[in-house]
Image (cartoon, rainbow, N blue to C red; front, side):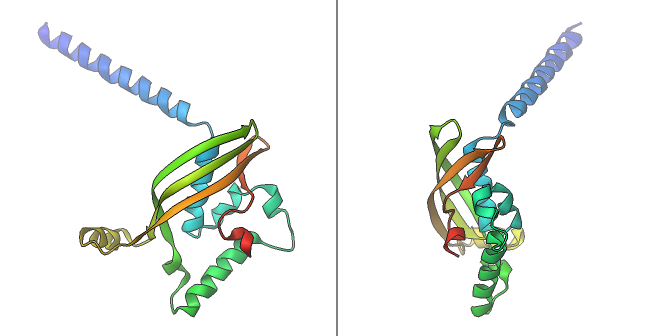
Length: 164
């Protein structure tokens, strides 16, 4: 009889934990300005073309200029001038902290602080961390995020994209 009570208590705890976890996942599923800014920033530093999906229409509407493509081409040219391939220029963003200031219901200013380091093969990255061979660079940037068509998008002058 004692075994059945223990099993029932254990099963109840597991069921409650699963229900709570599903509820927390669903609560975290909504899009926020900070999530958009962080996703854009990570894609930007990884030189991923998907950064374009986080940009507002104002930045990507120009049919003559491909802002993301031009930036990636410029980075590849810079890497080639230094004797490397484009992949060498990739960096990973870590230790991210955000602070969101809502201007109104459709506009927010997001400050991103973190550290970026050279994006390496995971094995090389682990070895470099063990032997303290990695160098990190501080990131402290403020991004303007606006709501367009129900989704948050990065606008303004995000990093070096607007300088091209």
